[in-house]
Length: 180
Image 1 (tube, rainbow, N blue to C red):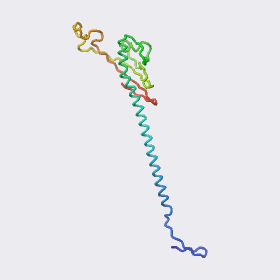
Image 2: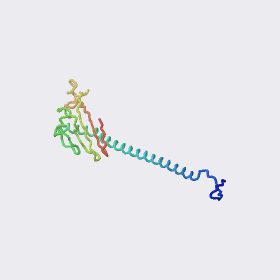
Image 3: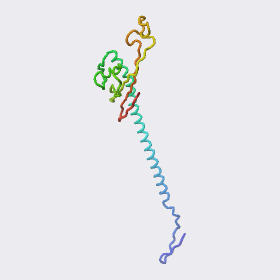
Image 4: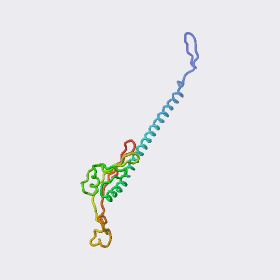
């Protein structure tokens, strides 16, 4: 104990170790640290949610584009059977009338513009069709002297026609995916 003389009086004072309030300061520092840690975790979680949303949007657009690759061959078959560019429910031809049919038959040169559009789940699917060639198939009526045998007689009985499809599907939040 220290004795201090003040104005003729002697006061007894306890010596301070300067640790009064240190527990409070340490507790506040721990709370600040935990708050910063919590904010970091929240930010990481928000980022993960955003990435998951983007992945979901991309998948929807991809599935829409992928459906174009499976839908358009049916349209092509229908038009070849009909012999003209006929109206098909849900299908919109993007060029002027008759140009899609002329392109798939090989009468007109390929252009890079999309040829067909249909809607799926409220989103557009645009498909460009490019006729790349044809090939005579073995065993068909194109083989020498086989027409009378009844194998593949006819205009399409021994020919395969090949097409490249470029399908662009749209999805939520402006997402797009292209399947070639």
